[in-house]
Length: 482
Image (cartoon, rainbow, N blue to C red):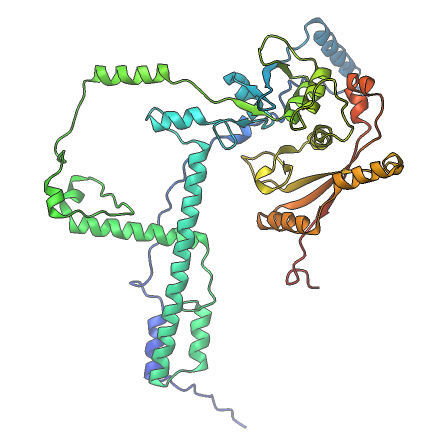
């Protein structure tokens, strides 16, 4: 039995016309926009290559089956004994009015920020960059500060989101117009809808990425520049670039006629006056910003690393490390307690410092988390590399039998560690909104001991505290289904 080839029916003229409109032609295809080069960022890997303000001198490797390696190790030890390496010791002073440690030396400020991200600029959000911002405001600094880069990135992202929303709205309008035209003609078919959905020319479910929005905006700016060059061929022939500002202000003819200085008039000053004025500004401009260290950061630098010496308010007498611990413990209360008052083992400074020292010893960059409603933020490498991954909440724990012997101690422990469910829900919701994992750190408070002996031996005092951490994640029903 002979098989006859099946003939496909020819589509209707309206359907063929609609399909031909959807096909990309040489006139409809938009040229690929030329991407503008991004400004070169500082080499943060080189700037922050040292994790801590310490000079490390590693020994040569010891190879058991190679006797010559023993000689190199012995020579290294002898070299360190004869001429020990110089360890930089930074200076700071304690301000009792703010209950914090301040640093005014520019070299020390840059060293502590670049090697471990210690402290905060008193006139900046995080990194001390007031001098660069002031120079840029006066026209003496040509680069960009970290605040300027952050502001530009946020502005660009906001504009790209608006452009993406506009493109999605345009696609929806085109889809509705196509469906209305097909319904009027009465030739709508499932095949056409499937084709239009498959080629992606008009689909309501299409989501434009920020990259597409950026390319569309750049293409629009190029087209506007071409239109301006066509409209004003004099500027195009002379080689001058026509700027297209984002906002245009039109004045009335009366205002335009009464201009104070015409475009052709240029006010010029003698170069000697200009250079002298700039030199005077640079000589008078003084860095008014200082680095502010928290008490936990100052004690870690002084006791944990031995890289900081703290002076009193008069900047004449050095405060010993043991006295520095007592001073910070007294100022952890408000108002600060007198030196004759007895200090509790669960005072706020000891509990918070135990957590700070614990995570700093594990290699984390610990920063203040007050803007997120928590005690600390944990960074893997630092604020300039990535956002914080974890947010820490510190809660004292009274598991020792000493705190449950009397009714007064039990009441004291319950008041110190009491947290409501609404508080936990609010903090967890905030961390989920900023994409951080909430970690609750329980610090086991030991019973009071010999206060004088423990304050002289900070290591023995810190060994009595133990840190337990628990990670909490917000449960979302739509994302937690099996």
